[in-house]
Amino acid sequence: SYVLIQPPSVSVAPGQTARITCGGNNIGSKSVHWYQQKPGQAPVLVVYDDSDRPSGIPERFSGSNSGNTATLTITRVEAGDEADYYCQVWDSSSDHVVFGGGTKLTVL
Amino acid sequence: EVQLVESGGGLVQPGGSLRLSCAASGFTFSSYWMSWVRQAPGKGLEWVANIKQDGSEKYYVASVKGRFTISRDNAKNSLYLQMNSLRAEDTAVYYCARSVYYYSGMDVWGQGTTVTVSS
Image (cartoon, each protein chain N blue to C red):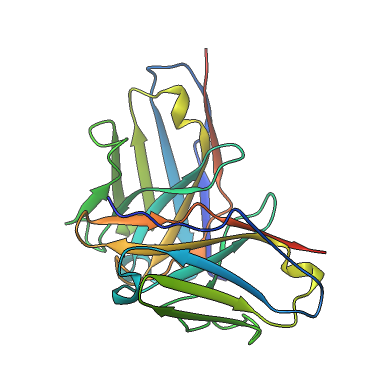
């Protein structure tokens, strides 16, 4: 089955740029979606189809996808961005939705 | 307001059954794929199952296939998850979520309902 690999944690100082990666075999050929989840809350879609943003999501959130790695980039990081982030794809070979293991973003 | 509200969670013994419901409002329910996603305590998100707009296609994660059944009633704007032969490892918060296509991002999520499988 298809596997998505995320780093368990990423730390960044306020005002800096955070980059969260999501690795998968030829993930560049798939549409990648990213979710933010804060403690005790439901996930929120922050980037879909590799690089599009739902309405209401700040422009500070962006995504890219190529080769074997997709990346969620958060510029001018704020304390309120501290959360778990998950990447997700649809695996057509198994007809499954697949989530990455999640990355905890810590704002120092 | 676009909203999904889950219900039906609770404490159940191993081997028992539970039926989760998800009530949709504020949007045309019959136009969306619907999914169940769960999260075990302290763990990441795990997709459980999804269902096409008209119910004609359903997909399941291997660990629940044959035990769980996803269904929907578009007339009642409701999604269901029938869970049988429950195991301790099914303990989780269960979320329902919508997407335009099976491969799309899930743009609306419910608040979740907690299922605990324990004797």
